[in-house]
Each structure stands twice: as structure tokens, then as C-alpha cells.
Image 1 (cartoon, rainbow, N blue to C red):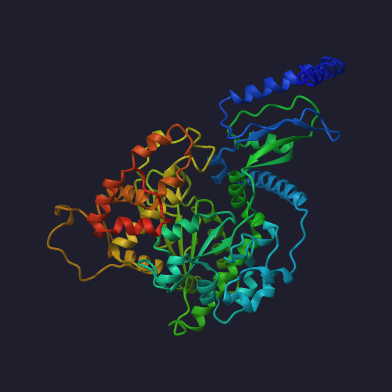
Image 2: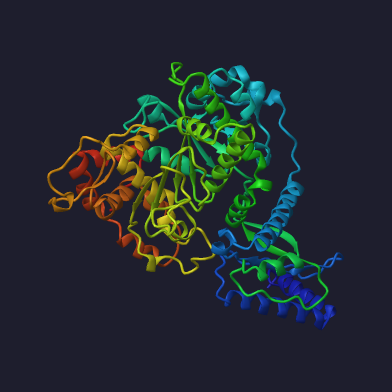
Length: 564
């Protein structure tokens, strides 16, 4: 009884405080609970419950309206044919990005790490001579438009000015600034990599896709260029003015029905998915990603200048390759267009500019959602036929106009093994609505199969082989009468059932099923059913590539644990 006495006293004290506060407290608490339930039953899918503060501050900001903004991604990414509407959209999206950046700047209370602390980093030997130029700021925004340094720390980078001031910048980029696993360091060139290219992955700082993609591509080294501002959490809380929200609703950029403002509040507290903010950054890239575009322009300019000085590449400098996925493709396309405009303003011939770009640059896109690729570079576009985002917004062979991917671009298409009916129903509110758009669970495996089947060891060789036309190849029978109808891209051979058998088997063997979107959804079990088991995957791969290939792929791809 002695132990229960304090508890009874505390309960009585709490009850006394509640009665003392009066009915307004109870009414406020009841309203908050009802509002929360209505949003939960609304049909809006929230991965975490919204946060509510019960008091309104003195600035007229409604802290109870901390609700999730769900953007209509299809309308958001689509270019409006009306110039006025497009200008209004860019203006309101720019204001949202500025508000979000202000929140990040207000949360940064750490100081920049001084150069003396760089001595404590475990930098590669090749970087020891330039330690004083290494950026070690703990603020991730300070690494924008820089190249990541793989030193065991996440926030270490090198500015492009330091890199491009070297005598052989692309050799240094390939050998010292590229991610290399233990396997790639031992191999010094794998089955799909011959060391003739400096491959740059253009992505967000937190994007770890390139590491997995490197293992799928037989430990191909990738450098990483930081694009945009990264966010630590899945959601960002930000204060937005009511006028901006009303403008978003009037432009049909919100998935949910917007509630009108019935009082005099001028600002409200909202939660925004950081994935949505990353997409918005690419839309307003001329303002939000200006530094990143300037870095890409400098890279392209240095590559073109190398071609001018050494057209036969007697110096054996690596060829520049840019890789991008989904919305990041728009940033790369915008930088190429800006570089081309600068050259044309210098009274250079358009044909000469495009020829230099074609020799100096190869661009590989995965599931692109952009149709403004300027002519010149050697483009390789990889996407799935059943990818709703590329079909609606990207450059692919199914475009009605047949334009947008750049002159003489090469396209590789297939069907993903994922049934569209099994995907999430919020297909217009997230770029992760369909796994046919998933880089790690579909697209990179398809590229790996095409290169492995044809013995290709570089992206430029892949482009040249796909574009090759043999003038002496004269057949005395139409290929449609062949017993096995292979799909040919120039010199490349694409097996007829690559998407039915080999692609699902490669996804399973590389562990791509571990990267499926909506892994915790009820449909994940059904999605697993479209992928083969170990026995079936092994049989398909060994039939095409020989015995023990299944074990070799698994050993390379992160020592994946085989499902029973």
C-alpha cells in the first residue's frame, strides 16, 4: 500500500490541474484528436503521423495546421504550354525552395572544420598533396557542386576548380576521386570496364545508388558529383504563406483537395516530403541549382578543350561520361544546353559545337523525365516500356513527336517484371510509384545484361556499337523468317526474351529485390512472386553466361544472402 500512495497522489494532482484549466483545454484537446483522425481516414497515405502544436504564436502562424503537402508530381514535372502558367509555377516553387533553405540555414549551428582537422582524415595517398584544398565542412550544403572524396567520412569533398586546375583532371577523377570497392582495386578493370572513361554519377549527397550500381556493373568505379541540397529526414517542416498554397492549388499541383483559409492567418506550418523537394529543385534548377550547372559546364568545357588540343587523344586521357537517373537528368540536360548557348554566342558554328560535344561527352540516362536534351553529346537512354514517368514526361522511342532525346541518341527499352496492378495507387504523387522506374531493382540490371551479353567494356563502345551499320551486310532472307528473332541494335545482339527471363533472374542474383519501393506494403509479397527463385534464376543465367556465374554475381554484389 505504501508503494501505491504516490501514484494516487500524482493522479489526483493531474486531475486537479485539468479541472483548474477549465473546459477550453478539454475542447482544444478534443478538436486536435478529431482533426488528426479525419486526416488519417482521408485517404492520404502518411508514413508518419503529422505533428500538432496546440497553441497559435504571436505572428499569426497556425501551428495546428502542420499537414502534409502532397504534390501532383505529373503536373509538377510537366512543362506547361502556357508561358504565363509556367512562369507562375516556377515562381511559387522557387519561393518554396527558398523557405526550405531558410529552415536548413537556421538549423545549422556548427562551425566549419578548419584545415588542421583535415590531417585527422584518412585520405587516399593521391590526395595527401592537396589536403589543404579538401572541403571538410560538417554542413552538407557546403558540399554542393563538389566531388565526393571517399575517405570513410560522408562530408568530405573537393571543389571542381581544384580538380580542373590539374594537368590531367580526368585521370585524377578516375583514379583518385572515384568509388572503388575492394574488388575493383584488386581487378584494376572488370568485365565491363577497361579504364578508358571517367564516369561521373550526378546525384544527391545521400544517394547511395552508385555504390550498388558499381557492384552490379562488375565493380565499375564511379565518381559522385553532389547535386542540390540534401535533407537528413524524410520530411521537412516549413512555414509557408497561404497565398503560395492557394497558388499551388489553383495550378493543380496538389494531390489532395485544398481547404480554404477561413480566418486571417497569413502563414501555416506544413510538412513536405524531401523526395518532393529534390524533384522541385530540378524544376527550378536555373535558380536552385545554379552552382551545380556551373560545375557541369566547367567539366564539359574542359573535356571539349582536351579534344581541341589533342583530337587523337595521344595523351590517353579518359573520356568523360555523365550518368543521371530520373529528375537529375533535367539538371544535366540544362547544363549542356547552357554550355552550347555560350559557345554559340561566341560566333562558333553550330555544327562545329555539336561535333566537339559528340567527341568529348557521353551521357547515360536511366528513366529520364526530360525531353530537352540538346543535340551534340552521345546519348544513351535506358528505360522500361511500362515506366509511367518516362512514358509521360521523358525521351523514349514511343514519343509521338519522336524528339527530345538528342540527335542520334541510342535507346534501350524492355518490359520490367513488375505488374502495374501491384504498384501503389498514389501513382501521381510520387516518383517511386512504380518499380519500372527503380534504378537498383530494374534499370541497372538491364544495362548490365546488354553490356555483358555483347562483351562491351565502356559506355562509348556501347554507343558506337549500337549506332554501327555494316554496309556490307546483305542477307538473302528476311530476318523475320529466322527461327529465333534477335533484336539487334547495330552490332549489339539483344536476346528476344531478355525481359521475361534474364532481367528477373539478374534482379534476383544481384539483390535488386532488396531495393524495391514499398517494401513494407502488403503488395510486396505479390511483387516477390513475379521474380524467380534461386533455382530458376541460376538456370537462366548459367544458360546464357556459363557455370558458376550465379555465384560470381552474388559475390560481387555485396555478399547477398540467398533466400531459401
